[in-house]
Length: 311
Image 1 (cartoon, one colour):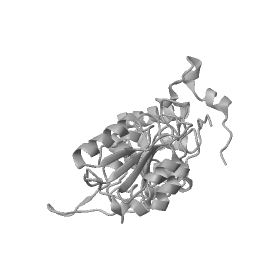
Image 2 (cartoon, helix red, strand yellow):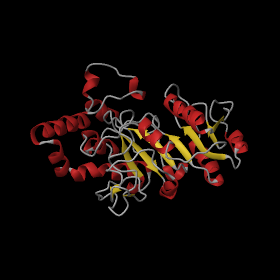
Image 3 (cartoon, helix red, strand yellow):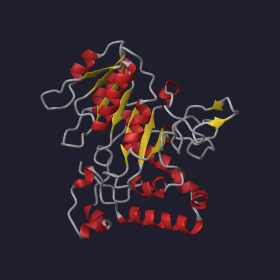
Image 4 (tube, helix red, strand yellow):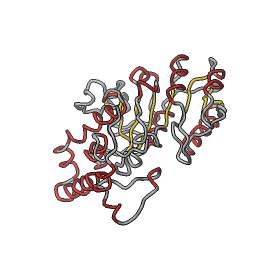
C-alpha cells in the first residue's frame, strides 16, 4: 500500500519552493532540505577529515544504500548495485549480455535516446537485429503484437516504463509476464517511474532494471541504481572490470563470483564470499563508496523523507 503524499511537508522541506515554481522534475527535481543538508555535511567532513577517513567512519550509512534500494524495489540487497546514473546502469546491464549475430532484441517505440544509441551500436558491432514492437491504439506497447514476435532468436526485451517526454505509462507487468513465460530477460528502464509509481520487480517480473535518484525520488545528481535478478547473474559478463569488482589473484588471473551489490571487500549488504562484477564501486565508472551520492543522502529518499509522488 502506498502511503499518502504529504504535500505540506514536501513544500516545507523544499527551500527552492520559496523562490520559484519548478516543473522540471523529469530532468532533476529540487532536493528536499534533508538531502541537500546531508550532501553539504558529508562534503564538509571530507574537507576537514579526508575522503577515505569519512568513508570508513560512515561505512554503515553508505552500505545502507543497498538495503534502501532493495526495499524500494522489493528485492534483496545483493541484487542492487550503485551507479552514477540510470544510463550508466542500463548500459552496464545491456553490454553484459552475450548477444550474438542474428539474435534479436524486441524494443518499444518509447525507448530513451541513450538506450537507442546503445541498441544501434550493438546492432552495428555485433550483428544483432533490433525489432520494434508496434504501439496499440492508446500509444502503449502492443502486448499482443509483442507476444507474436517471440521466437527462438529473441534474446532480450527492452521497455521504458514511462518515457521522459509525455504521460505514457507502458504495461510493464504485462510485458514481464510474456518475458518470463518465454524465458527471455526483460530490461526495464524505470527512470521516470521511480517515485511516481510503485515499482515492484517481483510483480513486474523484470530481470534487469535501472533508475536514478535525481528525478522523482528527489535524491542528488550522480546517484542511480541497477537491479539484477539473482538467477540471471551467471549469464552476464561485465564489459569492464577493475580491482573493486574482482580479486587480483596473480598477474595472470582474477577471481570473481556473482552478486550485483558486492564490493570485493564485502559488506553487510553483500558478503565477501560473492564479489562479482557488480560492486558498490561499479567497474563501468560509477561513483565509489566514498561519494556522498552513495551515502545516507539517498537513504533519506528511499526511507520516505518527502517522498515525491504524482500518482
